[in-house]
Image 1 (tube, helix red, strand yellow):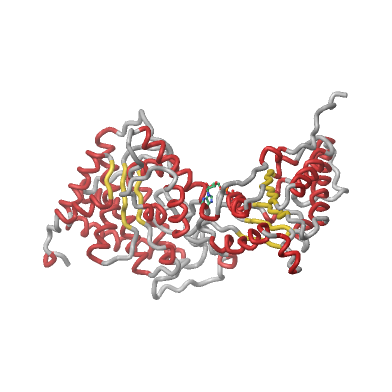
Image 2: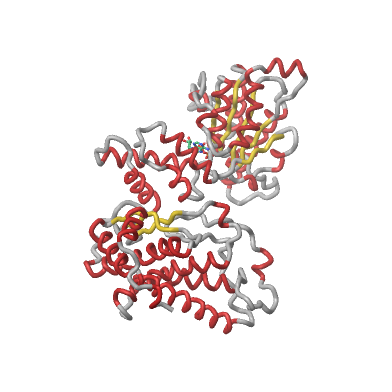
Length: 507
Ligand code: ADP
């Protein structure tokens, strides 16, 4: 017999039996609510008999649900680690085999081991791979292999359900599973008595990101001077896994550059690598091209600093410019984000200031090159037009603009998406990414108002930059020389080069 001596039921989980995972709740950050809820499981695992005696039943199964990389596996390990009990882990995909009976044997085996070594934790990652909604027996396909695979998966799922149902409470085994696609799960699995606890693991907010960075920074040699909070704030939407990767990448950069510890510049480099890719060699814009690029980037950056300085604008300001080509981009401008809450209800003045910032690229070109403007600033212009149109239509912040006509279809289904999750070059949040309606009656009027609004803001920006001509030239020069400039350096230049045109000469 070909298969003799090969025991398929032996799950790979065997290799993952561990006295202790060594992971503690202290290794987890940014998901405090979930951790709070899970503490109870640790108390149970530490002393199951006590719970039995008191007649308290532990949850049957706990489903951790949330986007990838936010700590589902980590927190499951931490439960076992805190309680000091063995941890049995398998991925849902590991159960899915074409060979008949293997999957269900593995399920049985996994639970058997966990029971023998109780108290213990069983964790099935990506449970959706194993427990997607069943197709129904009558939906047979012509494809024989497909049918076999589907049937095999269903047998495996059934076995899992049997284990869960027969899971006597008070047996000292906690069953956890994780998914990022709860919608795909078979409803049978979500019925009471199976997963009776569902815990959402959310992506970390700014404070959570800071705490996560601190945890991972403590495992490497990070220079004292590094300000982790600025990375936490400026990397919205980054998961714990991505932040951990950032610290690792920065450590590699530091080693490559023979630094004794990780410096701010190493982290900046790592952010650029992870967002836009490594430096690109062999691309040469030529000196003229570099000058154009530097001019538009400095125009945008300087406008943001000037607006904050002289108009107390609440607007993102530039933290760093780089004109080193990377990945698909020729230059990068990193903005210092506001607090997450500031994006909830932005007011008109704030949005108009942001519009001015976006127009700063073209304005700087005009100040330096006169009417001889180039393509270098068109991306910013496109963003500016889009923003202006949103101010006038979706947000309707312009009086006495009235939006006539039927509410467009998108209006009914607008979902709160929250601040835009990408980091590179994105200056503003986006509550919805749907094109603004251009097909209703006020078309012409909106187009005209957009032009007027942009025109007004553009003229303001040009005169602002003209007034600070010396600082503009100096910043461009420094950027061309160093290829990078920081927000602090820009502030330093602004202190050294005060505005030239006296106010009485201006309107
Ligand atoms: P998931 O299971 O949700 O896909 P993981 O738990 O596997 O994510 O996360 C992968 C790695 O990312 C972890 O081992 C850890 O290094 C890091 N990480 C993710 N989330 C967090 C967090 N909330 N706190 C600390 N580190 C985290």
